[in-house]
Length: 152
Image 1 (spheres, rainbow, N blue to C red):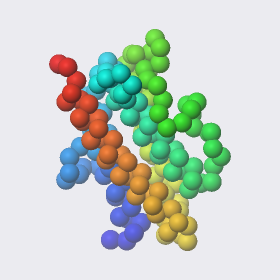
Image 2: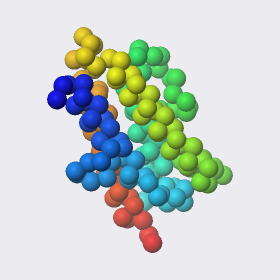
Image 3: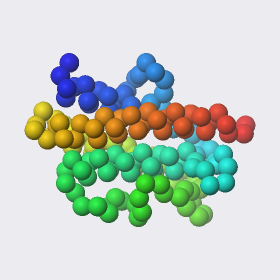
Image 4: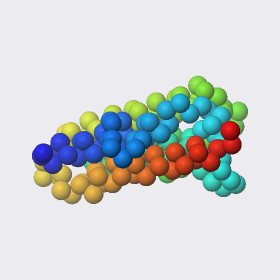
């Protein structure tokens, strides 16, 4: 398998393709309602909604580094973690919109990777490329844990 195929497969499995290790990020949030996504395990702890946007943000950061984009151009104001739900917006529409943002950022990152893989820049960006895939797997595990901790 070529490096390009391996990296794209790693990225896809961490986010959306079938894996051997358990749920990927998309599977981890599948079936989660807005109410469940907003649930916090404790004061000052992140919820599923925030973890989802955090993953979207870091896909954007890696894409920005690949494409040479300017900082501060993410669609949401702020960086890293975004407080969710926003006041008065703990509804399915707002949750769906933020999940769609994650999907868009993943697709945009994948397109950017396809353009840069097998070029001289690949080696320089390799750590970011596999790092964002591992980041998805890490947060998929956190989300699954939050789902199990949630009161029923």
